[in-house]
Image 1 (cartoon, helix red, strand yellow):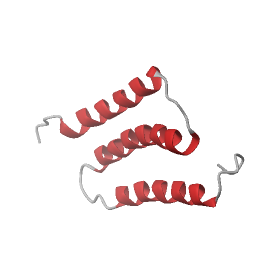
Image 2 (cartoon, one colour; image 1 turned 90 degrees about the vertical axis):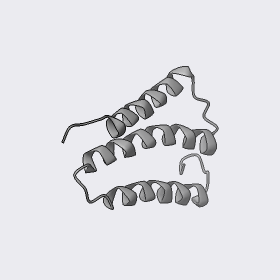
Image 3 (tube, one colour; image 1 turned 90 degrees about the horizontal axis):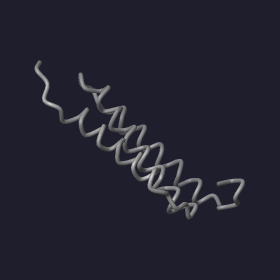
Image 4 (cartoon, one colour; image 1 turned 135 degrees about the horizontal axis):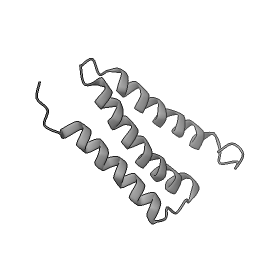
Length: 85
C-alpha cells in the first residue's frame, strides 16, 4: 500500500483488520485452540483475496476463488467434524 501511495487510511484499516483477527484468536481458552487457529487461517486466506479486491482492485481468477473455497471447506471440516472424546 505504501509503494502504491494508497494513503494512511488504507494502511491503518489493513493493520486494524489483521490485528483484530490476531486478537480474536487469543481469546480462545479451550482445548480446541488449534482448530480455532485453523478457522483463522481459512478466513485469512479468503479475507486476503477480498481485501485485495476492495483495496487494490484485484480481480481473482477461478483458481483464486477455488483455492479460497477449499480453505473455507477445510476449515468447516476441521471445526464441525464429529469426534469421539
